[in-house]
Image 1 (cartoon, rainbow, N blue to C red):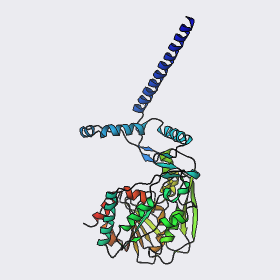
Image 2 (image 1 turned 45 degrees about the horizontal axis):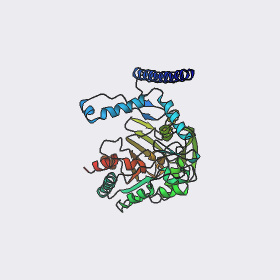
Image 3 (image 1 turned 60 degrees about the vertical axis):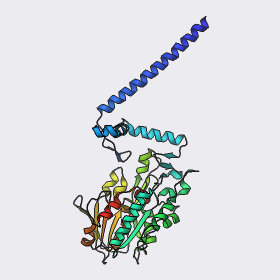
Image 4 (image 1 turned 135 degrees about the horizontal axis):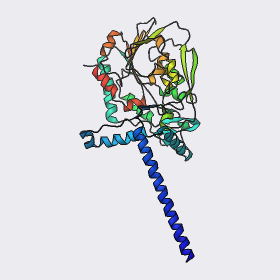
Length: 391
């Protein structure tokens, strides 16, 4: 009889503990829900280096197609109290349990984080190649060049976790180049990056190439760009050794920090100034030191992305360059300015005007399309921008 009473007491104790645990969880959820309601929405996460989803407003259309509830779920996740701490905790738990991929980022060796390559959509890729070819046909007098930069995962394969399934971006680049008009110059970023794969050509914590990687690619392609006398001596400055980029932010893993270098060529007296029409600002340098006090220190190059940037130089040449670009071009331009009278940069993701008048206004002789492969294969804006110039 005593044994039965003892077993009954133990059962009741376990049930009471479970009830208390459930109540504590409910209290915890309610408290955090109330805090999330009271605390104003944040616009931006410095830790993740991205804009956060705001609480959506309901409309009949959004409710009907279900987008309201999807946006509501995303905004709740983005605005959750102490989100940054939870992201870091999740990342460290993932690493301790042996995960090799987190949020489409490979957790590599030597503390490398590498974005998972984008798989191209054939229809979208065809639209882009058609637009580039049509642009070339409409501007036969311009020297048109295309450079797509492969991602770190396809260059630094030895840094990937063992047995990592990897999409073959090299094959994508080959297929893309073969669809271009033969009169378009294909600038090879793959070969020089592969040749220097043991060096710091990509950041450990960010998806961009380093200035050193951009330099190797420039020197390899200078002849095909029509540059005969290439400057190869530079003053090199480490402007930061505390850079944590987009991949560290995306994963919440903060295992190392990168150095950012800038280069200034020696053996030339060419000077320049940079004009930013969107802000009506001018500068005698493409490097913005104030960016080093911000989270995204890669914006030291031109202060980040702008719809339109104009570089005017004292170079003794009639050549002027128009660049359609993403952020990879920002660190590439430090090697180009001594060779052109004018360089005009257009980021089609933010530029909504017709770019055709810029060709005559700036005496454009050369056109370069410079993108990371991952950006281009997801892009819709480049084709729109190029097609608009035909009308």
